[in-house]
Image (cartoon, rainbow over all chains, first blue to last red; front, side, top):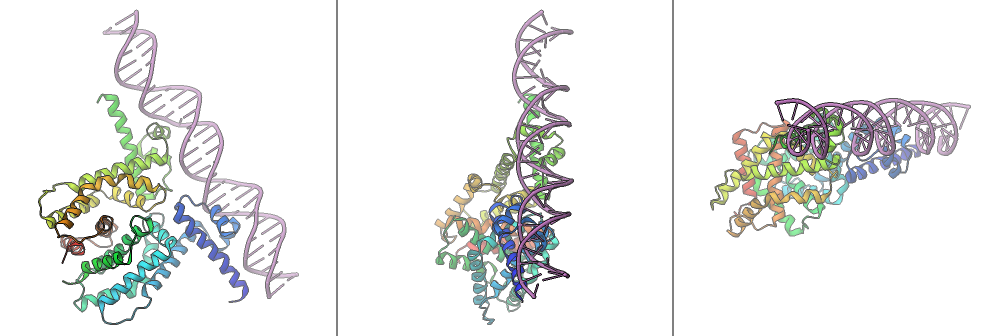
Length: 194
Length: 194
DNA sequence: ACGCATAGAATGAATATTCAATACAAAAAA
DNA sequence: TTTTTTGTATTGAATATTCATTCTATGCGT
């Protein structure tokens, strides 16, 4: 925690943030390291002091963003036994996180749909979801949620939030609070037991 | 329809198919034109006889695949007034098309999530959905489907199919017919009026 | 003075695109 | 039927650019 360490963190963070912004805007292939350096306000060589390669830089960034997302997801979780309430909370948390951090969202979506990085790297970071997965399983045991494979319900709910966030962020449809409420209800209806 | 024309079509198709396969496997940035040429069995220069640039090649490919998808979506549509039946049919059509053409699916997903190509190019090809959009609007008018913005319901349903297809294609979860039925029911429950 | 941090030019490998030369198929002429 | 002509299709080497990465020199805090 000394000053030296702070500085390190500063530049490292600047590099990560520049990478995120540029990749969101231009895509993987179109963001050269030189551009990252410029935007981060460092020399190209400096990047290689913190990351051994472009690939490692991108993987590290992915891991950090996934972790941040996991944290945002769990905010203000009452931990009550009301499955529906918690479900709405989690949905809103994730949606709000995406809207408040569009760069992170853009990067994560590109990463998830790109063969640029190994499948293994993608799976390594699923751990951050665990509390929510547990929550979903609990909902099933309590007979509130449908008995589905964990992979299926996770993918469906996550995909739902992503779809709504994309509408808002792309400007295709303004997601008012009413519409968001409607969307969450729709998602809930797709997993709850009737 | 003379021999000359057939030949043109042949090479053009070979180039498009090679592009699709390679991009699905390696991503946009990692598929050089030289690799496309090799896989298509033509010289690099030949590609430029049919497409003015890599970007145009990719855009043309996207347009073709989107059109194919639109056609697959509408197959065997009875056009009956039973909204639920038609909904299940459309869902299954789309899902089956994705599973039967994983390369096309992979390319479309990458394209949709990449800033590589302009937003305009993406929107131009939304026309192929029109019959299904009309169907959804009809379902709302009949009081069977919830009153939602067209953009919202479209995105939600499409995203649902995509999520399930990804599970199957990534090998994360084998989608048996039972699970598919369950998934479609879940999607239906998210848009129908209770 | 020591050692990590930073700079930025240099390097070497790729890459998209161009271009001049060649093959080819169909029509025209002989 | 043969020969010539014509325009398109195809090739693949050459070009000019771009990029990830390396390396040597310099800065700077302790």
